[in-house]
Length: 352
Image (cartoon, rainbow, N blue to C red):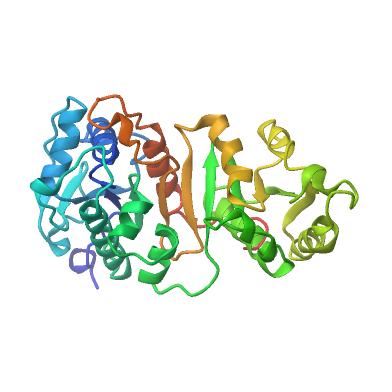
């Protein structure tokens, strides 16, 4: 085949979803796009991938108005019409959402249905190879459940739509520090029945592989204990000796640089000083409180264990500031940047 007859290759594509239309998602998307639209304004978050915004055009326009911005993106109605490469972001018309159903600043089942339809469409495009990564603005779990979702969260929703049956988990990152958790969106009283080697070891593997995918070839991992002072030698609980330490040792046998268990009230202090690249916690708030205090408006959530890189801001829909023009886009910018990095081949280092 001669070069002139070769099939042209397309640039990597990131699908960018508007999030819950009742929240700050459309506004922060508009703010990010205003900094990356056009050939002269590409930011580092989108320098090596084309951004394809997926959504109802009027919702994006409303978000731009909230931010006192004007956007003029090339618009397409079908994925096959998208250009192989574009000088800036483009808009792909997604699921429809009637304007009379819009309730800014309030939880809405109608908004939840639009979100679920948007996630379905993005997952469909990923499975078809039309997009290579997905980044979405903040969603509202209550709205998604009110709209009929039976999944624990959007991670499990994506796993279902992408046909993933293996281990998945949320990984959060902020300023180069990563954290994952053994249990996530479950009642605190249910945590203890899930603290076992069989559930801790996959969480360690997940954050190890995810950090490597994000560009760090040999991450150093700390594993937090469950009890105060990591059990204090068995005085305050035996889970550290019975299951957490054996899980850490099993990870070490797989050439993963994990250590612990460490007291959960100090491990993030050590990690924030650079001693570790990532921390594995036992339950949701054990890690989320620490990460939110370190930088709530910059944190990113990664959906680990999926075949398609998927990222989102770690913050929520912020109904209390919707339409006020003050929403901070930094976390979304970081989520886009990280998703772009995750499109690259995994660096050399310890095996995944």
